[in-house]
Length: 366
Image 1 (cartoon, rainbow, N blue to C red):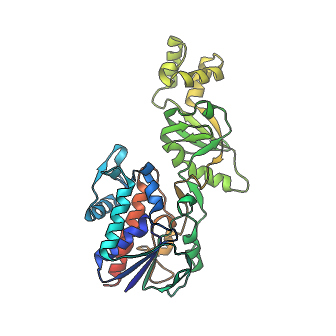
Image 2 (image 1 turned 90 degrees about the vertical axis):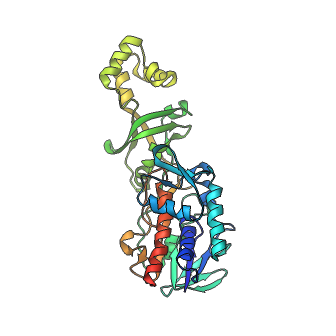
Image 3 (image 1 turned 60 degrees about the horizontal axis):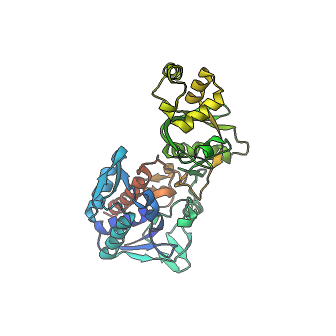
């Protein structure tokens, strides 16, 4: 039996290793468009590879898989799981070594041009026939790391629905002057995205002020809402409203200003001076600005800076990650319409879905 995997990223490599762990006699061929494998994987977690999260579904299966190939991990704040070495290169090296030791054939510099419903794969390095075909080609975020949306096109060509695509987990841009004035400063706050004045979604966490707008986990987690809005032909007015002191009441803030003159002891000098200047000495206005600091949002930094793509191949058309339209065709990872917040959740899904596809293929073949 021959299984062909399109894409040598996180999900594709995990799938290849698990396939050979399940069945050493299976021929497994991985086709990678770039000159080397795992390029995007090396960049994850700022080069440390936040490969899972203890709060993520199926994290146990992912960690057991990595333990089976010799990778030790450690858990940090908020359940984030990293390799013990703190190096993404360790993860890739072990996946590559496992492929080599198990006899997985990896062909790089090989672009897949088309697939057919009979699982024929046409490439610029030849034509391949598969008994099982896995699309693990990623999304279209960070094209400099290899993403080019080709997986969507391949699945669409055999009848699969691709939901609307947007850059996600990406920084927000703003025309307000204050983020650039506050450049480099961080705040733990509650952020709410407003569209035409209506609350859409809120989240608590860290915001980083930048020269272009807002970054940090909260901004990135809410960015898909902003991306969807500005992809519309008639986008709504978009604002980010920050509650800079979510655990301090308006009354407490007011009393603090009356006693100490400003909020520098709470917000820090730079931010307190901005709030004070906006309020022009009015205590109630200073409190209102602190609890409801409204910043104009003009969009996001786009796909080149996005960690993932929002949208993808509809999961309604897959069962155990196998296509309901083409028998023997599977998909895993970012090409699917399945997204999660920051913190290792998306990479966990990439690995898990690759592992699960391999197990589904093994089960379907007895």
